[in-house]
Image (cartoon, rainbow, N blue to C red; front, side, top):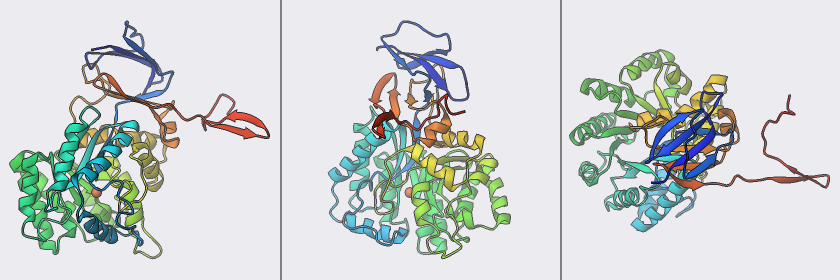
Length: 428
Ligand code: FE2
């Protein structure tokens, strides 16, 4: 296997430039003076390097389906669910696979190498889970893909659903999902949570539940999740996605909940793209933000990460599979523009997500698999501000993606100028 030397790299949290020597697919040496002979030398020229991004919340079964069979005119979650039901009629495995493969390439080009997707396991044809299991295998040289058996139609709304969920786990899904707040009754919502934990215990799987993705201050399935996690000793293996209702909880209840979440080592995934559009849409004015309490969760030492969720589908018509774009939106939306908070945003698309996904050997450390990215930015601030292109993606010691940064030539008063939107020495 060929060796690579990445030199003059700006590591997160360090001013000094550093070299990374990659041999046999792992980081063999890292340090300022490291400079052995290598088959390939990549000069990072002071650009920011990082462990790859992780995108821990996707719906690859729905991506790129916007407008098919029709557009979401109201922009609501409910109309999106109805359109999804219409789309599923006659949907083929190959269509799902093609769209999923395209978005995986977008994600990798944007620097993501570790992805978690939900797969509609309650679709009676079984075609969705099969499609994404095949994509996981076909795309394994580009990324690690975790698949969640997700009950898009809920677990207790029709008799076959529990067996379909178990079938998905037998086929090879990695994570058990749930949808308690969409069950027909609060009792069924609690049964939904218990079912997910039982199934996860049976298959030794992780848990990632779509939890309280509404704006109802009485939607509190997060409490049931926390209880099950603690009673069953499953700390660290459980993730609550969305939890947008938390925004509207009274502060006394939220304060108590923070302590429980910390004790349960709950992982939280916030999805700023769709949730900024879908939640609290019915408020009138004043209108809440419809987003979980990101700053409070972080301040309480709870693991929070950012997911893309929907990319051009019935629920969200935009998106390009870019974690940096998610970080940029969340910075504004969750008011995380304080100096140290910007660095937290990068954590939320790297190490925090890796923790949620329970990745082993993640990070730029000697002995770890040589997975890394080089961004077209000198700082974390600029990486987010410019939503920088990812110049190199290296996976297990191999360059799997290269991007030439866009060059903008602008003509002012007949004279050409290069504009890259970066600070220079002239900017005092
Ligand atoms: Fe989702």
